Length: 242
Image (cartoon, rainbow, N blue to C red; front, side, top):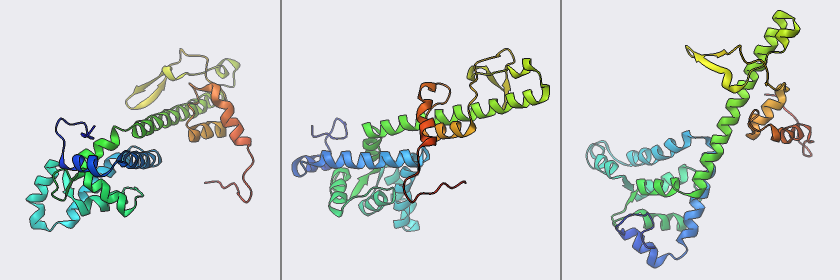
């Protein structure tokens, strides 16, 4: 109950939170959800950028002499000054009041030395339900992008074959995802696969990719993308082409 970060020993910060901050769990959920939303919006690169931001902020507060000694030891311990910790929280997209920032400092200042644990903070974020959900969303989006790119590529290949041959037999060619192999980094079509590729308008493939619908493995959801294409724009909105 007291060991919020799941370690065998209770830190000074955890004990302080246990005694003085009965609503700390709500603050924890708030910051977890906020940073999970940042992950969804910015992609997987946000994770490494978030961690690096803490160290960059710490380095900016240290002079060159200190960076070569104490700062290096602090980095090995996974801790930074509390001023760098609070500044970093704001830069990585956390919207918190000064009181909430102070409460987080209390928790992650493990020994009461004004040095906050980045490693424990990151662990608290990345083991949360909100963060795991965001990672699943990104996984679906990546799969949707891969399937959309694959389908566009193969439809273009099939149309090119149809244009070259002009014959009905060549016009029957179709490819499914399992029939593409890599050869020196290039996709190669297995000519033994002759059917199964859906003929979809490119704008429908594009909207599926945007919505995170896997255009090949979730064809039962294509109607959602089709409805989105037909839906009227909100009042005062205009369609723009990039």
